[in-house]
Amino acid sequence: MNEWKEAYRLAAFEIKASIKSFLLILIFYIVMSLIFMLSFDVYLEGEFKFFDFMFMLIFFMFPTWMKGKEFQMQKMDGDLWTAPSIIMLQQLPISKNIIVKSRFIIHAFCSFPFQLVLFIAMPLMSENFRDMMTPIAYIAFLLIWLGLSIAVGFIMAASEAGGNFNTSTIVKSFIYLVIGAVALYFMFPLLSEDGFIYWTMSLATEWTLLSVIVAIVLSIAGCKYWQADMRKTMKKTEYL
Image 1 (cartoon, rainbow, N blue to C red):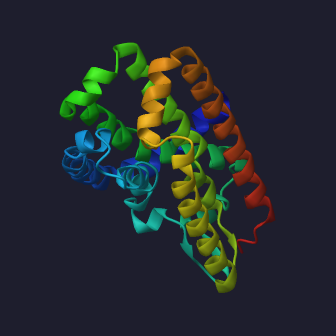
Image 2: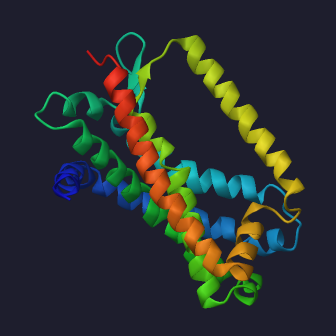
C-alpha cells in the first residue's frame, strides 16, 4: 500500500504539469465522442460495419496519443526507445516498482475519464441502447469495458518502458500488429455477426453476473501482468 501512495505522489507531479493540456483534450474528446456517437443507432441496426474498429481505436489508443510528446515513448540515443520520464526517474532514489505503478496511475488518469465520456454518450444519444440495457446490465457493460481497458489498454503503459530496438525490429512489430488487428477484425464475425460492441452488450444483458466476474478477473490479471511485464523490460533495457 505504501508503494501505491508513493506512486500516486510521483504521478501527481506529471498530472499537475499537464492539467491544462488534459482539460483541452477532454473538451476535444467530448465533442468528438458526441459526434461519433450520433451513428451508434445506425451501428445497432447493422448498417455501420466499421463502427467497432473506430470505437476501439478511439477507446484504447486515442487517450494515449493525445498525451504531450514529452510524456510519450520516443527515440532517444542510439537504438533506445522509451518515455523520457522513465530515464529521469531512474536517476532518483526510487524503486522500479514505484516507477511502474506511477506510470499505470498516469495512464489510468489519461484514459478512464475520456473513455467514460463514450459510455455516458451511449444512453444519452441512442434510443436503441436505452431499450436494450437495464441499469444493472449497463453497469455490467461498463465493467466489461473497464476490464478490457485494463487487460488490453494497459499495454500502452507497459510499452513506455521501451527497449533497445533497431529500425527493422520496429517495422516488423508494426507489421505484425497490423496483421493481427486485421485478422481479429475479420475473424470476429464468426463469433457474432452483429459486431463486438453489440456482443458485449448482449453478454451484459443475458449473462450479467458472469460478465461482472469475468470483467473483475480481467482487470486484476491485466493490471498484474502488464506491471510485471514493464518491470521485466526495465531490468533488461540499457537506458544509459
